Image (cartoon, rainbow, N blue to C red; front, side, top):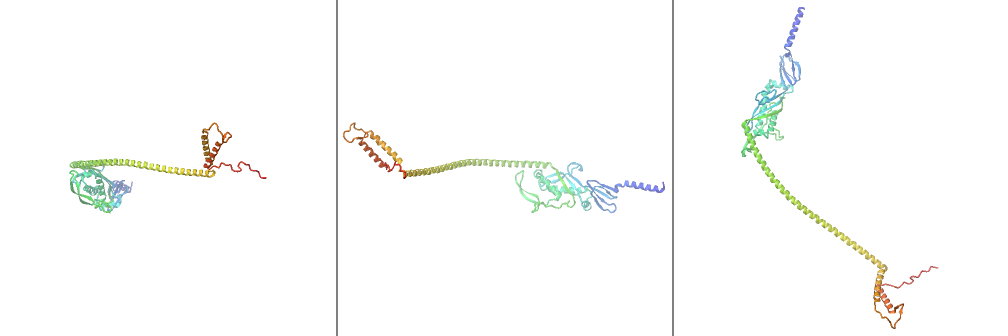
Length: 412
């Protein structure tokens, strides 16, 4: 092997050794779920690598940031990324009670390259831990303290627990609330006396009722906080005793109020039942009255219908009578009531004949006119005289019209 080849081989071997030794300074890999900020070795130019993969480092300085982190403010170890120490936050409520609050929040880092650069270049945060201690921790702590100042420990324990969580989350994301003080009289839940107290409340826009915020330290940084969770409220022992006493007193008040309402409700129920009974009796009376009126109206209607029926019957009888009278008049006008007259004539003749037949007559008649056909002349004369008298009274003409019974002669 010639000297030239030996030198070339040594140089190549040296380059390979240097490449192996300084490979991490030449190439670098950005892992999934991370982004890297590179400062060039000579020029010092800053750049950001958001996409995962390998790229040239060329001896530049590399800072690796996770795209999302979990922020812990817990009193004990709570999972990967947490530390085994008490990181809970102490807050003071408006009644002076101290409480330690534990929880977590999810921190999402910027997704824009310029925002990522600004965290280092403009804001001066050298790492996520530096940002957590200087920005995230104070922001969460101030939001919790501001929220605690809007209520009492007992309220955070009971009716305003959900308000505490929502208000704290809102202030972490949008900035602390602007507040104002108000004074009003309230009833002390333990003593029951009226006391004057000063409270803080959220200032709101009069037009929209939206809260008015102070400066938001995370505005424009591209950082967002999500999944904010308060795990525990660690009240001091004396605060727990105080809350228990207040809750007991409040329960007693509520129980008394409930009993008063129950008694009031019973009174209302009794009154309502009494009114219902009165209305039921009144209704029954009204029903009886209505039934009587209906029956009376039905009776009147029946009487009216009967009266109409009687009137119709009377009118019918009158018409029938008038028709019968007219018929009889016409019959009488036609034959002079011959049938009736003959019937009467027959009855009269029969009556006097029967009476005449019962007279006492002598067995022997001396002198005088002789009998005609076994009948004495006096009897015949009397019979004829009675016939003429009755016929005259009845207006009967017993003569036979001329030509009656003579057959007509045929024309020649």
